[in-house]
Length: 101
Image 1: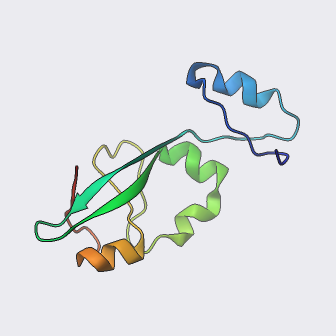
Image 2 (image 1 turned 90 degrees about the vertical axis):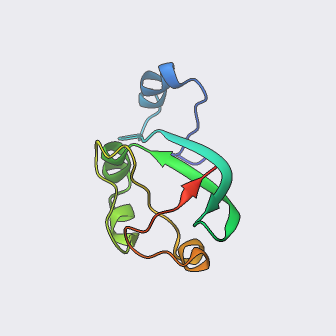
């Protein structure tokens, strides 16, 4: 495992465990999931990643800069950022609507 990078599968114990490694200064929880996404006409499979915007953007400050449109905000329960290729394939633009299944 590279210094500063780690995976922990025990969410309740994550902060103390990660902080015990020398060199780790921040961490961000993530939830990976997959399913179908559709725009009402077309559907395709996707792999998604749920994040906490506060800790994600502190841990990876450049992540906000990679977004065309509106980055996720803390407290936004229904927000999402989609990859450009997937958005083009579904014909979606900024603030477009898609359904996850």
